[in-house]
Image (cartoon, rainbow, N blue to C red; front, top):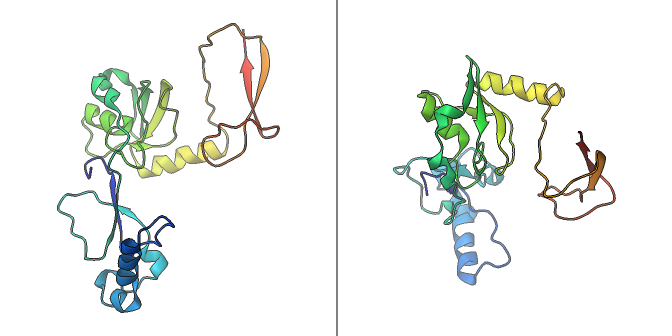
Amino acid sequence: LIHYGAVFYALVCPRPPPTATPEQVKLFKQYTAPSALVNKTSIKGKTVREGQKTFRITHVDQLVETGTYLRVHVHPKRSPRCYEIDWKSRIIVVADSYVVLDKPAGTSVGGTTDNIEETCATFATRALGLTSPLRTTHQIDNCTEGCVVLARTKEYCSVFHGKIREKTVKKLYLALAAAPLPVGIITHYMHPINMASRLVSEDNHILLIMDD
């Protein structure tokens, strides 16, 4: 799980959810009491809020203090398709500051919260034998196949993000329909929420333009 990036820690435990058991609440109070925090060397100079920030554990020999909060994703989202791909054949361009990859369907560009190992960026880095890991500059859906730009440097990440903000980068999708569609603009209304929307809305629409 540590190898996948599915284990996180925080110096101070965040407040338990309403579903916490009495024993869990008792432990929370025990390890977050001022008398307990004052003796933690790792929290010195930090506020409680800063101490509650979570970090990923990346090494199996990483030590944590007693009372440290751990969050473990015991069932990380897997991407077995990564092991079936000839990644070198999917590389389109290798430049000094970036790499263009023909992303296979069924793979994640930069990973998920609980799996940063089985990603396009990781496997493309290994295929090219690079010493520094490739960085994601943008995302396309797991089920989508197509070109993605991976940065070789932190500086180029900023450059590419600037291009996105300035709208000088455009994504063009080619979709396969199960039945014939009329040519023209098809309006798809989605409910404006932060998570992936599944609700129809009368506002905030997405436009799909169908060409011949």
